[in-house]
Length: 307
Length: 307
Image (spheres, each protein chain N blue to C red):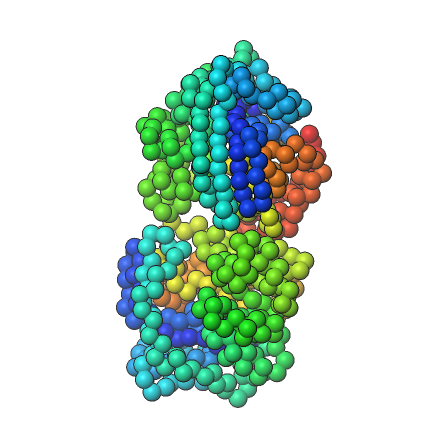
């Protein structure tokens, strides 16, 4: 089954303790699509400027990613520049130039309304909802958000949250949204708005899933070097939704497996700058790392009271 | 099989967003012993002052904890006062009065040299080693440490680390010890000194185990309210060593189960101030929470390449 993603395509300039890239392919829709398209075809809705490098388009086209929803607008592509110090959990944004992304209005290619799986990356919640309302009978819908919208467009954001199946936020955003330090209490607050599930991203500590009846934890892969954490969250979402779309279902067991696939994909993403590693990763590598996650977490049943 | 613990017994004054206790029973040896004695008999080596409340002794005696190694010295018992704000991962120490603990010299009751399981809580590494050298044929030895010793007695600390089977540190201490932000690189550095295993405590993110051939992650229990995180690490160690001592072995599978028991016990500890919850927890509660940990982490095998 196919997946619709609405989000950003950007040119990222990123510096980490392990190197630097200048105007590399980035953006939430890019990371999501590169990850999800490992599992299922992706319809991408985003905008770039006239200056967008052709080689980046070829990169995306090498995958089952439909680019008919990628608008090319007069002006410059969205640029982001950031730096990570040794604590790779904290992003320091140096510059954000929205350029054509400032006036982004998602346009759905005819037929996109039928896409069964929908991921709304962290754009304006009003635009997220507009897209959501155009999808005819979605099977699974998922949204991300960020501190900017939590602070500025709270009401619109809550409105959008009420309309989706799955919400994802990072831990700091969740605490900000709920106004409590307790992740468990904050999660309940989000679920009370209506979504079936909340996925909390915790960077190097992995990710956790909350539903009314399920709690599931997936660790992050223990990498010695994280070269560039940019895109970890969006590629997690891509691996997660991609796996669900490939399975075509939304059972508790497939959700758990999707969480692990999300972690697996994110762990490849951060091994290299930009989407380089996502472009080369193979099915064998994914399956092998998935099995490693099983080894990291599996333990035998309780041996009985004993004492 | 029995367990020897050497560490502190303290009177803790602790304030958290959920309340306050004054001169409550605390200290590393106390938390460890209250936890480990749920699984196996404990020999406790520590010191208190003449002012130590009798009811605390009765508390400890209600368990299979041998107190013949608990010295009562002229002077006051070790006092610690701390406060936790809403971010319960960070301790703010208000006051540390070592009192009789400043001159603590561990004395082993005759027969203690034969104890097969040994836990050296975070005391002076020279004292840790002194105790270690007196144990005749230990089956499993484990040590904790802290920033103070990493900063002040580095050489002695490394010397002690070379002599134990298992080292435990919290994440910040590990990074400080190894001089790197990468937990994986830091863990390799510790293992190169000789221990068979390193357990990194990550507070609300759980704990991870490194050996040469094994990596294992256990999450923390998703509590809505952590009333008092004091003693979480020492009671984790108590649950871990207690379980190993009850099993009487040190296989990869029993180590994983011991990690989960450590997390289970720590999760009970933080539900109440001091060791209150450790005094009331039942075997049924432990077994039931253990099974919850299985549900939180279990996922099915990889479904195959598919795509």
